[in-house]
Length: 89
Image (cartoon, rainbow, N blue to C red; front, side, top):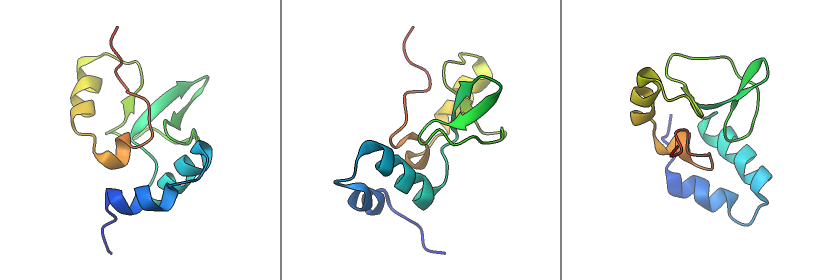
């Protein structure tokens, strides 16, 4: 399978509304490992699609040592069009 480059995604989403950009990005590279904690569930931080928890997930606003270590392993596929998972306090 051919590896998708960040520039390919950027070209494809250019000119679309933000919500459409996020949907296209998730369809091209998969849902982000950055997760939003919503009531009773986790969601992709890019498109807000509900998703199950996975071992490499980084939860927005979780400042535990484990979460911060997982954040170091994020790639552009995770961070594109997503909020900073660990904003400054």
